[in-house]
Image (cartoon, rainbow, N blue to C red; front, side):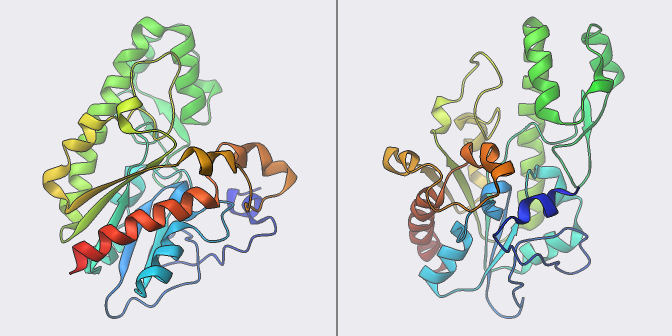
Length: 276
């Protein structure tokens, strides 16, 4: 069963495609004529289980067409491998790029699927040499693989984490330089980037990204918008989310509609200033 079919539940995402891209995005499909704001990002931008995700709320607040190019579990690679999406972003009045985790992209240690970036394709020879005790054939997803490596070889796991951080900065710089024009970088999470450290376990999403990495990108963007869901929004949990019983566990780990409303309010103010 495909992820899209599992995710339909009782919420109609009105899946659509743009240009020659093979990816399915959340609809309704928007006309790409005139001024529009493009949103690139992962699950939060897509709005999984959210009736009105923040790109839709921003459109309502600004009265400006907003094209949601969020893709579930996306890493930086999925956008760099889709020329049609890059062309749309280049034409946008402003492009909002969500800070996505560093785990879902190919690097010197392992390779991910070019479109479904959370899918683990295989370990490199270097990865197999460093972690000889790990059987990489048992993994299908990057998070599962990294969690196992972290648990079995914590002394060497840091090598992979550091590689992902360096690769993320380089890949993000390539993405931002390719898009050009006016770009707003969005941090949307339940914690500030300052709280990301070398803690036990993998840590929280967006995985491995800290403030230093974000600040490295500042010269390439018009603004960096930081949205940390408030305690009140987090306490509302799944209130207003729509999912099937099978999806409840996944939905509980995500930011809900209240947090999306907070993101929309902050982002709308920032976009008004950028578009003046």
